[in-house]
Length: 368
Ligand SMILES: *Cc1c(COP(=O)(O)O)cnc(C)c1O
Image: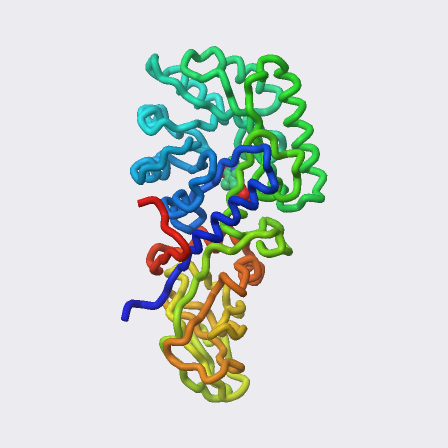
């Protein structure tokens, strides 16, 4: 039998989540974010499941190339734009939209051979201070982009929220005000421009930020961007289930320790299971003590997860035996809860899942 570590991807759940985005933002087009191997869910598989989206957002040419090679015809946006001028030939070949966030990228476009036509998304830094042009520089940059014979007349003005996962935070309103002010200042020069601001948090909680394009990522995978919630509470269905099986069940004596570092000491003689999954699969060491489901019964990881294996407490599990199902997250165990236990965010857990664990699709198929 093959190693039982499995990442199950529910494509019907993904389609449901996209429909939920449409319901929340009925007047907006949807740029589905599939960077980082679709947050660990599998790039081409998710693009297939989400083919009702209007466009896809990726982080690099390589990801865009994979989608085109799989037959994807959607508009594809490079979220950080080109990294070097040498990429522009591929950008044309693959027919990609570009985020333009700094002056070097404008210079790249200005130096591109004539005849090229680029669709650009002009990124404005309204307060996150990661990528983008300061509001004061936007009118000059916008004029430079318009002057390029190689850009289409429609530019998408975009910005990104730092705190959309905290809807009450005053920073959201401030960023939105800056964005609207930039748009107003451009006046008739931005008449043809579309606007885009909302990630998952703003798609769910800030309808006034939906504009022409919403850019959901996390929520398409059925996960809530809000720290104290889970996707189901926001009307989403979790897409990923990480599971494996018990490969050993033994009784360990009272006072004995379990695993590397001897971090767990048995308070009584107790059944201890070993499941085939570890940090080599992307299940973090910080998950020591995290909840797991064994045959659907909630219990906990004991000791430290190792590279290929995790030890679990089987007290309370009815007649445990080798081959029993162990769920690490997904289904009745929200990844949001596991992430809180690990002191991280669900984005990091799902995007960290490795290809080493077997991926299986349920309820549909990806691009072929
Ligand atoms: C990743 C990303 C998103 C999606 O964010 P979520 O919080 O996953 O919805 C949206 N816009 C940009 C520019 C991004 O880089």
